[in-house]
Length: 66
Image (spheres, rainbow, N blue to C red):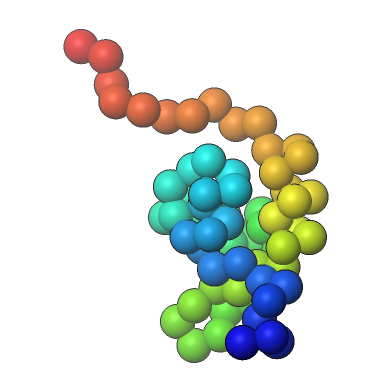
């Protein structure tokens, strides 16, 4: 679909950012990543993902240590 070639879904954006796709959904809901919600899918402009990725530096959460 040529119209959507300039957009990522949350799974594709998560791969670029190196985070879980649910994290990308949450950041879209919170407005931290500019995105548009069409029906039940977030569409994120590829340029916005690149811009966000250049500034994104949050600590990664992982499994808890015992």
